[in-house]
Amino acid sequence: MTTKLDIVNGAYEQLRISGQTTNPTPAELQLALKSLEAMMNEYRLTWNLDLGYQFQTTPTYLIQTGVDVAYNPMMEWNLAVRLIPAFGKTEVPDWLPRMAAQSLSAAIGNVAAFNLRDIQAPRRMPLGYGNTYRGVFWNRYTVPIANAPVSGFTNYILQGETFDYTESYVAWLAGNTIVSFTMVCDPMLTITASSQSAGVISYTINCPTTPPAIFPPLQLVQITVTDSAGRIDIRQISFQVTTPVPVPRQ
Image (cartoon, rainbow, N blue to C red; front, side, top):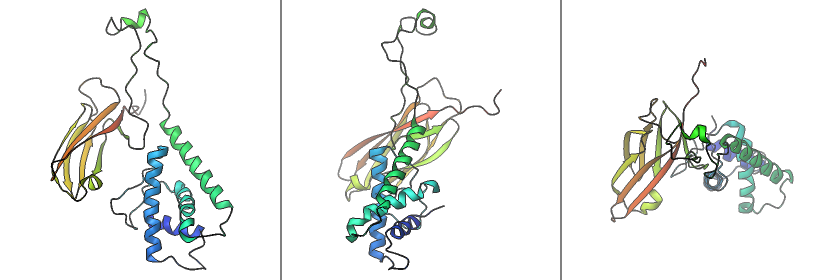
């Protein structure tokens, strides 16, 4: 797997700051690491470009990026472009901005194809007499299924899976501490463990194979935090629950 330092060194190589010219200083490496973290967070927020990047409250070099190696050139080229103003570079290869834009566009298109969903019938579309009697008889119109928002902050989970998640409150706390927190979730999810340390809440979510009833794919986890100043913060985290295709298929 690729570390964040590998991406930083790759970006400096694109700018010809390392290699045969001069090696980046510790301050320049730290600048690039912070720029990489900010860039990937911006892409996730503004472009829904969630590549599985491992965000950190305090970025470190040797942690793995968590991103497929196919996206390494995209991160290196775009980080290199963002570092240009910091060094006052005037002789930049003309292909670098073009390659950065092309790779970013391809990454956004690939993730958008993964997030593509079928268009649901609107609420004004009648069910028809035959379909009306299959459910509640007075429901004459289509009821769209509640899906989680297509966002880099939406978590995707299959029935039967168990994953660990974290939610950082460091910025919100602003020097305060967490006094208490509570967590609740919708019926298709189960919180099996939760804890907090240094302003970060860690929790484990299990999605049962057999749900208690029929619920929409959109399931929420709600975290309520009280800090030492008496402030209360409520966050609702979206989960898209999917039933896996049975294998082997009959």
